[in-house]
Length: 479
Image (cartoon, rainbow, N blue to C red):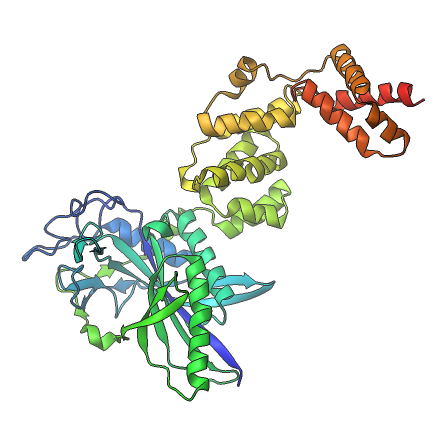
């Protein structure tokens, strides 16, 4: 029997607000354990929450970007469960009237476009973090993360492959980052996903029993987990067994999932309306103001780069994958007036150095003006492209002034014909075998001579001058 994989996602996105959702404690990542806490977020008796309006602003912004309906009258609910990292023994969330509903996101996989439904987006508070200490054989709890605001983006079960899931998560991450809603640093848990997986016979209208893998924060792990879990369920069914609805843990080292506990349903949490928070009423003006101040999103930016700057679809996609990289490109292009050159340096030198140094896009501090200056120096004939790479690296790593660096290191381009003629003559004299190769029709030998000339001139020569002089000298030598 052929089976079809069915996947639904619950994506948790930590919001980039300065303070928590119901108190004034900082949301800054890290810090000594239990130092970013107060009586409200640590669940002391008798305290009262106060809603952070910025959280609602971000939720509306995310809802509009994912084509959701904004719930004009929405409220909070208590989700009751006991766990050591949840000091109140309940989480403030939204079950009955979530702030965003009935949205959709378009994805493209292997040239085919498809809409993924968004069931809802709701606001909630994050829990703390358990730290397992193998040395002392104990578990410690850090409440710093308690009360950090989250958006939970719940999809419909519309995915039919791991590739579709990754395409959706990639687009969702781009969107949230461009909106300024979240930094989506998966390594810090700012974006993580609960993955619900089931399989059903091809052509069936009835979904199979699903399992869930929680808090996954790596695209690579999510991709592998979906394929593994689908295969495991098919093997269970083929052997005459029954898939059990449960929460499973993904072990990336063992490349396998393991049962943790039976899957909870909404009734297990005994939801009831949050008595300490008033309902939220969202009017037309609030929505209009949010819509009017929405930044340009990646898809629109890609289309504009292609029409306005003449970039290819591939180049536009690479540059817009990270918000900070796109801003650096735009500012550089505006300053130098050469968008294609700016794109080449961003995609080439900038991304190469980011990869080599492990620099994340949000950590970039390189100034677009300095990149624009390098591009101008090349186009004006002050330096050649080889030297430009060296200068770019110095700007990236040491934040040097390009013009001063060129002067202090004597890197300005040599365009003195007489000097080039002298060096070319010596290179020809020192490499008789290359001359013999050229006489035998081996054209690659000329490239070797050009390289030797550039090396002798320490890479500073004008390549056009070198080629011109070399051609003239070779005519004399070869006859």
